[in-house]
Image 1: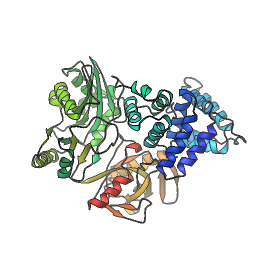
Image 2 (image 1 turned 90 degrees about the vertical axis):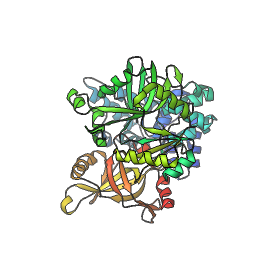
Image 3 (image 1 turned 120 degrees about the horizontal axis):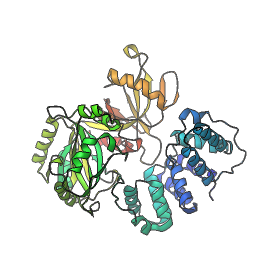
Image 4 (image 1 turned 180 degrees about the vertical axis):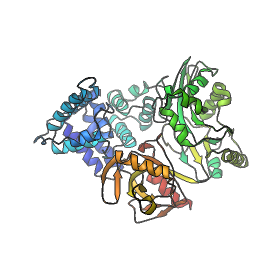
Length: 508
C-alpha cells in the first residue's frame, strides 16, 4: 500500500521543476508502485488535483479552518485518504454536516504538516503541482508501456482520467481497447487551434471543409430512439434545460446518433444573440424562459450513426453521415473551396454576426484536445481564452469595484498559469459589478491593491498581438488587450497556452 506521504512528496517534486520530462518520470515511477485499480485511480486523481469523489460537500471556508496539530509521523495510506473523502462525499440527510466535519477533522489530525497542506490545496482546488491532464497522460503511457495515442484515445472515450490510468496499468493496450464510444456517455470534444490566416489554413489542410464559426455554446447530443441527452463542452448534462433541442433531435431521421455542434439563441432577424444569453439557458428549466429565448442547434460532426461508430473515420465520412442524420441542421460551410470561395464564406459569416470560420482537414479522425492543427479557427480579431489570476481595485469612477484584471496563459507542462498581462478595457458597468461580487468567492489572498484568485475563471480577450516583455515570467505580453466576455462554459484546462501567446510574436 502506498503511503499518502509518497504522493505528497512526488507532488512537491513535480511542482518544483519546469521540465516536462522530469514531471513525467516522477509521476510514472510512482504510478508503477500503485497496487490495484482503486489505489491507482486515487493516486491519479490526487496528483491531477481533483479527488475522484468530485465535490465532497465541504466548503472552502470549512476546509481552510481545519487546523489541528499535525501528526508527528506519516501513517496515512492512499486508501485511508480515499475512503475518508468517500465518507465525506457520501454524508447526507440529518446530521450530515457534523459527520463531514468529524471525518475531515480526524483526517487532518492524522496528517503531517506537509500532508495537511496538500489536502487543503486539493480540497479547495488550489493544488498546482503541475500534473495536469496532458502530463499525467504521458506518465500513464510511460508507466504502462502503452503508446501515448492509445492512452489519449481511451481517455477521450471514457472522459475519466483515473479509470483510464487504472486500465492501462492493469491490462495495457488490450484493457484500453475496451473503451469504446457509448451512447449516453459524453466524449471529450475535439478542439481547434488558431489559424494564422485563411489562405494559410486552406493551403495547409487541403482537402478541407470551411464552415461558420458561430458565437454559440458547444453541445454534444446523444440519441437512442426517443431518448435524447445533451451535454456541454465540459461534459455536464443539460438535457432538462434545453427541451427544444431535445425535440429537434428526436425528430431527426435516424435511430441512434452522437452529434457534435453548437447552439445559440437568435434574434427575430436571425442574428445571434449575445453569448451570455445563450449560456443563461443552460441552468434554466423555467418554461417562461424557454419560451422567451429559444435555442437552435447547428451540427458539424457525427461520431455515431445508426449502430456504426465513426470516431476513427476521416472527417469526409463523418460529414457524409452528418448530412444524412441532421439535414438542414448542418452548420453552413463549403467542402474543399478555393481561397476566394472561402473568403466569400467568411464575409457571409461575419455579415451574419458570427465570429469567423473553421477550417478542417477532411482526412482527420476525431481527437480530443488541441492535437496538432487538423482544425483551425480563423477570426478577423485575435482572441485568447485566458485565466483570471487577480483583479485590482479601481480608481476614480471605478473606486470600490474590482477592475484591472491580471491575465494568465495555461502552462502546457502542467505548471500554474503564466501571467501575460493586465487589462481594464472592455469592462462594462455590468461586468464590473459582477466581478466585484463574484471574484471574492474565488479569492486565494489579497493585498492592499489586489484580490488574487484561484485559477478557476476563464475570460475571452481580444488583442492586437503580442510583444516581447521582461515584465512577465513568460517573456511575452499582450498588446492592447480588452475583455470580450467571460466563458463559464470553459475550465482553466481549456485556456490557451503560453506557447499560443508566444506564437503571436511571429505573426506581427
